[in-house]
Length: 518
Image 1 (cartoon, one colour):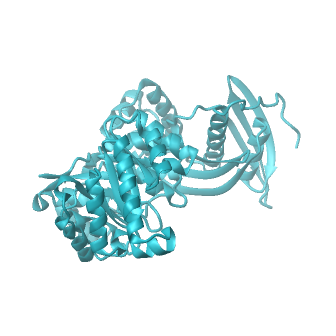
Image 2 (tube, helix red, strand yellow; image 1 turned 135 degrees about the horizontal axis):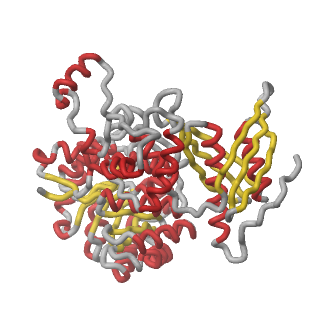
Image 3 (tube, helix red, strand yellow; image 1 turned 45 degrees about the horizontal axis):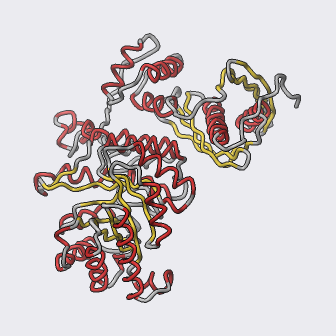
């Protein structure tokens, strides 16, 4: 079997897409899971883009030791040096530099002639190679580039020491046959046998996975992709679809990846939880309906033999269909055992936290599903310190939509209680929390999804909150929508306070001892 390297760009190209931005702790959480997934490369960010992106790449590089960590850099000296500064502590660093090669980009974006761009690419790779042994060069918009010129650029960067050459279909324009031919044409480039050819395909026409596989069939041995297919515009090639296509057809292709496929569903769910954007129900591999059968003839076939309608098993991607028999009388050992079956090895502290949330949920629900347990993990086992925790919530509503909410928050062992009235429960709760904390916060966006079915279903709430001009995300889950929203707002506050405490001279104010009158 030949090995296909999986280059994951969820934290870079994926995170650039509107609505998918992640803070540093979110990126670290996701990077740890990508390491468990056993991808070959994690593109952690674009260090020159912002201080936050630089710090995220630096921290991922310092913590993740078994996977190559890449940072993106334009083909200019400042980008490349800043990228290396973020990566230099990595066990396996890679500088990924890029420059457009299509005439459209050269004329309208770069304002460069072909020869000028060629020299820029050469200088960039030369500098990157002087800093780092592992250098990748991407020819942006290669899909619309003149092949003859593209191959000249690739030959030149190989000569300067690039070990990976990436041929992106940046705007998702090419048909699979055309893209496959473009990759096949690289065989004529001197030195191509000494490097890895990579694909990076976008999904503007829904062909990203097909084009990536066409590239693989014509000699590419690295695929750049993202979890849940997220990315600019219509997204990147979906990691789970590429990996499982190779998995299902491994014998016929003579190819394999090093991905631990049983971690795929868990990875997909974590990304949805971090960003608040879930995949569509009919999404291949990880969608809610990917292993669901409603038609009678399908149900009959699957019950007799799953292979009649399933080309891969739910277990192969880490998904369990059946409900689990856990309820309010279940103990810690039973919960820990079920989490082990799901692939979670919890520490004693994490188990204590998960069990506390589990018992609260079990008091409200008769049946606990695996999806519920995953929400508990993603919601409860956060890495941001909890400055405030919600201890009491009470709501009084009126027919004119006004609500009065009373909340009690605990901080450093002391309780603070206040009430506020607002246009609905979320507004009222947020005002009460603002009064207790002494901070100015407001909800910018709100979304909620039902995790499981039925009247007692768990609802997961995602909020974008501005706290003292700092934009943060909050998420929480409960069988009660209003409690979930209040906890999500408080989660955002805790993140904002934690971020502020890291700034010199900035700290969280001590709340008033007595509630402030309305």
